[in-house]
Image (cartoon, rainbow, N blue to C red):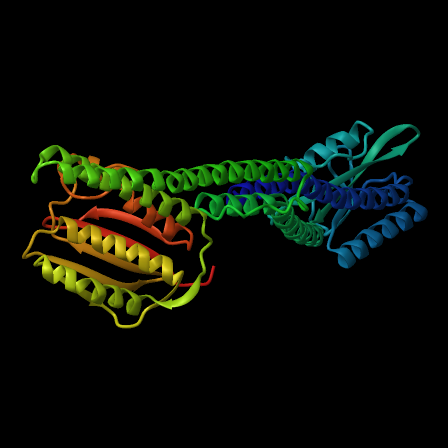
Length: 468
């Protein structure tokens, strides 16, 4: 869930930052250009005040005062151009230069400069030139200001400014904005990690507790002390549910154990009376033999029910166990019976593989699996028990060469009281594998079934190698 929630939060935060960053970048560029334009307007206004009293055109007869004013204006424009690299000039209405620096510079015939000159002829100062961006290498800012005498526009001051420094300042400002955005994004990502961790921590704990209960560890509970109030209420509700489920299961186990225990005495008395009755009947009576067989089967069912109740109720005593040695020892214990039935029972695998398991429960589970394999393996065939490490687990396999099971039967194997219709003549209650699964689940082990080629059944027990 965290991997799905984090990208969503990060995308939303990035969208917000970009939505703020782009307008801020545009405002920064606009402010820098406006500062340049205002500065150029002030410069143009100063040149206009100097040109206001120059009335004679170049080459015409001029008084000494007019000549001095013309010279002063030309000198100011020339120093201005040399100092700032800005082209500047004062032009009459027809575009004839009154003074210009450089001397050969003229009013642009088109573009922003021509528009600014036209606006100034109409008595308006430049106020909104085209925005120059950092990637506009050839961009320049033309500014024009009218020279007014006696209420009439007699000339126009035009400046044409390079934008290299301005674009550098804009780019520097954008870099600062980008750095700020990156820093804010890092802070936002860190906050998102903390927020999702705080929100999802109770969910992870709840998931772990649910898994524990699903695998038989009914004592698992959730500490409802952290996270949002809604999840704390959910944790409390989960604990109440787990308490009720545990109580119901405990009552069910107690009922099964008590029923199987209480039925043993009447059943024993009934079997004894059957034996006494058999003494009064002729030897080889089929009915009494059938009753005796069904009575013994019922006794086995009661014993298995009691064993199942105890297996589901008992807590596992997990220890670091040599799984290979334990499996080899159980194979050795069952080999005499296998030899009597003509089945070759062998152990194949490593000699030492450790894992965490309850030795008593695992031994009982292996006994049930080997017994089951010997029942269905005909004489002359093999039953193989193997142990091998598999990453963080240990795999125990019990493979027989019996008739095996169909796909439908594999889906039902391990269900309580279920037995294949083809094996009804084999002794058993249908609870052996259920007891085995309950014994293994208490220690965190799992049990699975699969066909064994070319025929037979493969039973796999997976035991964890790490401490729970």
